[in-house]
Length: 364
Image 1: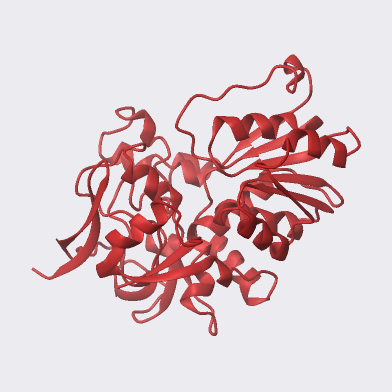
Image 2: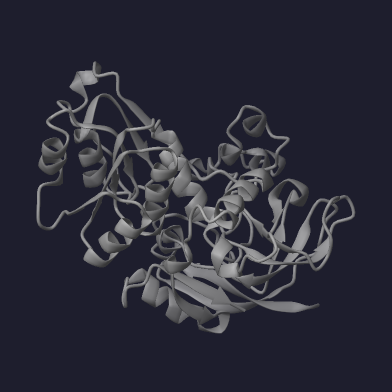
């Protein structure tokens, strides 16, 4: 049996490199040889035991690679082709997909009689590193490949498209969910990789004033280069008061929460104008509270939108088109490079946010 190296979840606090069999390819699958992948903040939630996955599961959900083998029913692709797949890889025949929310695809659970057994698995459109073996390995099996694989345009490097499967799609969805109109003022909480992508997305959608908030001056500097007009360091000011001053007391048209803390969610609510939209991207580990005054006791015409990053080949094509047309450049987000053999050290660096790390390119 042919074997491969893979990063697997062992127990809370332990992700380790192990040998696993190379997956068999079914009729609708594709086996992709990983050339570059990365570590996500969600992987850190898994590492800490804050998001449960099965013991021995290969983690990771951001694949860039080359088609090694195609299933017999997969059309329109060829072996040896460079591709990416979204972190969310739904079955597009599912009820959720047909209803317009493919990221919430639950067909994988229904097929296996698991529906309703694990409430935290409601987002089963997210399969890599959640329901099935993920991408921090030498190979990954892409299910429903014809709907999920996207060819990489000629001339784009792995690092240029590495953000597309997850954080670019997520950040842009945060901006899309913020109902941004031309000329709007948008406040974006946290300027990690997803927040920086949301900043770019807000600019592309026509926001006139983008206020970026973080506690790290280096990240705030990057936010400026990505399109933020004003940066606020929350360690030096009351960001809610500052936003109100900057908007003449009116409040922001929308806010985007990219960190996943109850405190930033509440602040994102407090900075809104009446009728404003809060777009929530964070993965939360505790209950949220809606501040009564900011919410106008439920009478303020506010909207709260949540999202799991869209996947599928058309979403990936659109994102790569943005990069290929030079509308956005996320190359600067890749701050470190590690071999797959050294992924435990890469996790330690990323989990503790040392050395200015934003994203790590992991290469088998």
